[in-house]
Image (tube, rainbow, N blue to C red; front, side):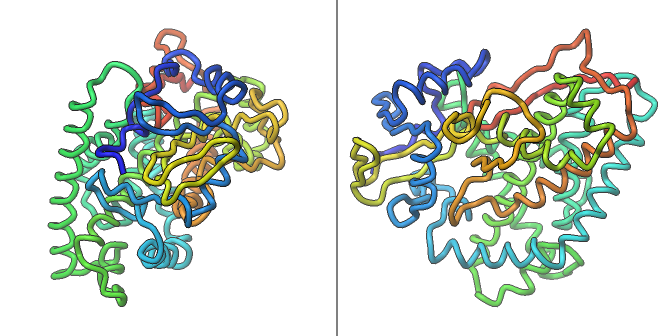
Length: 389
């Protein structure tokens, strides 16, 4: 393998995220759908069907980014991956489903009450960030006093993915620092839960650890749930609100018929996926199309491009909330299909339904333009000012 896997967190030279990355995606799908980037030392894949082959074939492509020196369920391969996957699937699919719904509703109502007398807010700071983070903190038995630290650390865990100016060394330093802080935090939390278990996810998994998974690996597992579960949902909420308000006819349709919101969320996921690309490592030499990918080489799959592939999605560059079917790749495919996808959809449904219901005159701020983040992997907004009245 290469000494450092950099393709996933160094932007390609042709990508200008601050303008329109989708124009670049279209150009690459047409001219170089599978291409090798010598500077980043990786392969880039831009078309839907090619991406599917990589995502589904876990016997040929590994998620084990060993050079990152950070282990979590996201970077595990079978059989270890399945040990954690089964543990997580159990906890998220049965007992916690209804509990999550009521918890998300409760936290959303608290945030709406907090802003109900305001005329304009930063949606990212007041709603999109607090709701998913507070929800996961409550679910995991983390006291709300830790909110600011958790928010900072989870943001920094994605800071190594850059689009333009930030030097690689600074991004990696921020990333490693946040991982260290989260590790220390969860080690203390796990110790506390072992001594004094409560009715929460961390206590339950520690108590039900029948497979005798080592505590450091459980720590990494909890860290992955918190980081991935919060950041991607934060971006989903911001992207959805922006697209709804940017398209007044869509907003009017959804306000008149809230039952269409789940389908609209699927189109948000396709049109502005929270995660624009993911990577894999070739296990053996393998040929895709006319290209041979060598063992150990990194492959970057551009989900944002695949979701605009005209061979799969008609009128792919149009935001159509009635699109059906909508087989987007925003949650991946194969054994690493996002285990939190149902939770993300549920959060988005509850938050967006209640926002549109409570504030019928929502609009983008005329004086404060949206501020996109500068992260080419995780698409979202740092600030999204909206008018409530």
